[in-house]
Length: 500
Image (tube, rainbow, N blue to C red; front, side, top):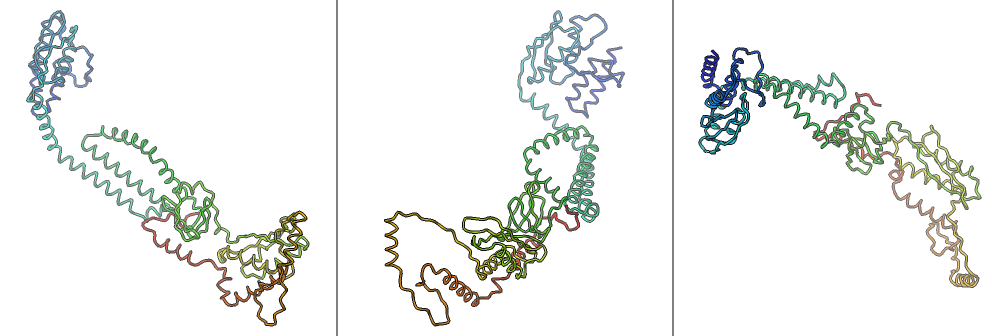
């Protein structure tokens, strides 16, 4: 009865061989011949371990039975029919020929699995015949090609399903108004749109693989993607850090377009915030890009947040002058300037008392949105200096003391007596010019000459351009041009987003 079942199973598998690859037939035939009980119970799992013993019969095992079992198996396995078998005392000796090493190894493994086999001696000759080795490969390719042609309609359906799902995800990600309605932040809206697109692509891929019956590949792909993601993450660590910094800056909005800021000692006007860098227009008119990873960690000074800005400068008066009187004269001169704010008030303090002078520090407030900061400071220094000099305050120069021995001092005095020219007669013309022949010690006259010369030069030129403290319009024209010319880069700064 057992033999009849084996023959029936063998005939059924030979009939099935017309539609199945040869390698699958080998494994199925071996499993049925070595374990006939498996044919009557489909629910029992097959045990394919190499070291699992194969039961022969319930009767005592002898060499003839082992020979019959091995010979029967080899006759059904492709490529092993030429292998000769001899059995003596449980020792199996294999000889004959196989096409290659793979078939010889298969024969040895199958013989070792027969119950009662003590050991297997391998005397098989590997012929490496071209026809015997090429024919199975060609047959496999032909069978696989036929199977592929049969599966082609299903493959087309899977590709169509993937394309439809991926197209819908792309269409949904392009609905900008929808994402802007969900979140006002343009960067987060774009991130959500791209995330949805990727999710639909993955769903389409899973659907296509499910239709093809290749769900096992999904786990392999996900595992490979995880390993690849870790490797890529280490490789582009700086890029990822910069991208996260861009996300945080777009949420925090530490500045707006056209803000006057200082970021890590880099001063300029904000043009835009992109997904990679913060664009500034420096006060020199240069285009400056700062990586967002540095901007996020940087100290940011925003002058536009508070347009009122204070500048300071120092002037020294003679130690014999009253510093409080000098402060009053300087502040009165400062308040005559149109760009100086009345509130907060300008102040002045005594900063230091030196050997020959007293250092006064003036602190003045201006509206930098309407006033050029550096021009305002320059004009304030000039007006304060002139006011102090006009009121008789002297601005002392450094004093140097030189010590000479008596002989050298007498020689210098004698030389000076012969070199000092006779003082010229006073001029009668109303025009005052520089007098190169004036005595070296006549400092007051030199100051008067310098003052008249300055008034003459300034009267001959346009004073409005020199004393104009309005901000430079050229910088703002360049900033406006840069804002209009985005070059495909989306600005992450938005007046609709909350600002910290």
